[in-house]
Image (tube, rainbow, N blue to C red; front, top):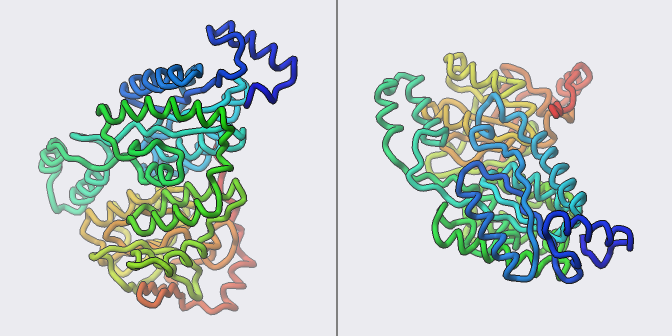
Length: 434
């Protein structure tokens, strides 16, 4: 909110506010930057201090607000993953309120959670406020938390491959997964992150330097009125989709970013992703499948099955599917259909399958997102569960076929039978929890 665009009364009140908080009394050319801190660890405090130093050295003034974060464990836990989309909406409203109520000229978001970052970014976009994101940085020597390795180990314990005592020994050993989501790499590609900030290690000198540079840069963006809509262009959309596909990025990250582009009337539709994938050389390992069932995307690797024929096992919630899997109720040759998962990340379920050594026995179809694992997963199925079309009307026992090579996702159910099901279906829209 640029000072020079305010009414005389608003200018006077902003001067009084600045005086009360120890900020410059005559803002004029002094941009006021709000730092939205959604960090879970002590390092966020150090980064905030560096951002403030950068802001002041560039001639600006800064203040900080702490906000809630939707942690990594919340994102992948079947009991809490369903709240991700609702949390992002709340985060967006919170960020918009912070910016507008404090008449901020710019904002810096500090977080390591992609769900939180996406929501806060949307709020700044709604407020037409210049914004940068500073990831907390990648973690090294990260032990005994819910990560991909932990989930795989848990699956091995459940299947009896290893004992619980052996699993404890595995988890006590130090390992180095990448916790920082590829969303931040995509944001850096667009210009929402300072160069290198998405790959720096947490607590490193490079990350502290990136924090200071972020503070300086946001002041310049505030003076130039470089609002998010100036960065979220059609060209930027094409570039970031290409970057994601060629670098093996996460479709879940691209899905989160797509909502931000959509808010700027730049549509990141599944068809657009498929079109870009067909034009890239070498061909990315992302394929769009469609047919008599519905359409979706498969992100595959060397060990992912190219084809799968099986019967549908339909679950209305991720929790129900998780219980069934861990109790051994899902037989081999099943396509687990996870409905009502829009905005949810079901990667934990896929890793549990892989940990149990059943990646050749079970496939997944969902309207949510799933990062690449050894399990064949059709994600971002459209129309989704709320549309009362093919995907919403899959029933237990339906024969399903997934073929990556031919780009097919078919069912044995006749079109006339699908129409009958649609008339009887009372599926409600996705729940909004808060």
